[in-house]
Length: 420
Image 1 (cartoon, rainbow, N blue to C red):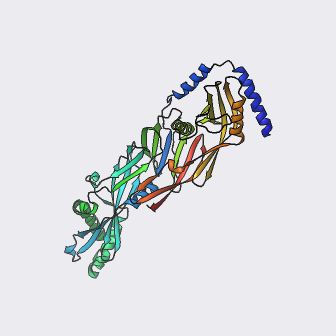
Image 2: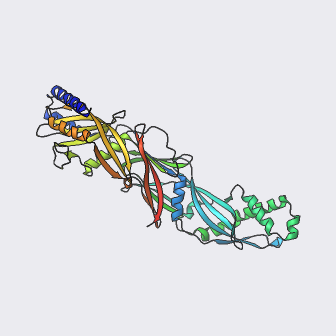
Image 3: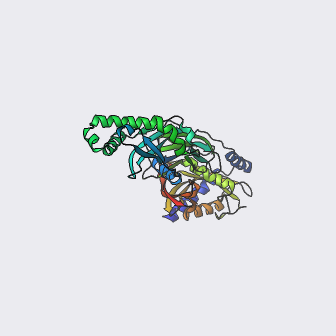
């Protein structure tokens, strides 16, 4: 079967080369130069990164500095029960917000210092505008300082009034506890909560929160030449849509991927993925020149770049030889993706010549036979995509899944946090 396929490929090569033998060397050189001058034809987004709120909360929790609690005295002296609580910052959580912003909630605890138990939770809601840092690689920075809260006041959680009422009833003297109706206890709890929000919070927030940023985390983004960044929220994640200057990139279809199990999801269009490989070839990070046997060689006569067309044979391999017998060809191929530990192996197979220019080239056929008979493969580290630090901890990402979805490359990444 393999022998017949190679024979058929050879016959097609010779027939196509016979038909195209009139192509001149200057025309092939011009073809290669035109490919180098190609520009972006469509607008993005070319990549979409979904950061689950639950994942961001874990990262924030790892770097959130503990603040000492602040004593809080409730105005219950007239009842004969001087009550002293403590107000503490328990955690910071993220949530959906308007486009371009990220919702942030500070969760405070009112603590019964005597019994070392939580009385209720209070929440302070605000939102921030994540900033794109055009570093190499680029990063999404989330920063919240106490001054950014403005005059926002804390509010109790849904069962806060009930919980505080139960605690107050339990602390009343026995006679007052028997006489106090539910309505009286509820009114007392509401009065205490209003006092905390309007009288205690304005004076306690600076001693509790300090002046240093409450949140300052950088999420390193895929190493793309980012042209545009659009942020929006799904029900469970912050979604960053990235437009690039990659000339090969193709826009993703509208929508977003729902992250599962706290996984970060990265989607790249096929054109964006091949564009990244072409950029790596341009930089010398991936072999781009080869000898006649298809072996990488820095001064090899053959040069290769990639393209993307989708369908059953989505990958296009473009080949040029611009001196010592000019030739060019395009080959359509299929792809296989295999996850091996922290690496991805990409196999290119079932190559099919789609165009051919220049004299008959048995030499190029020898390369194609090697390329697709033995399966050309390359690997990359998942660290090339997303990584970040959180305070004194290092956030480690492991690739959990990779595959194609409707012509796009889809990656799921698991999060682990460990001391540096």
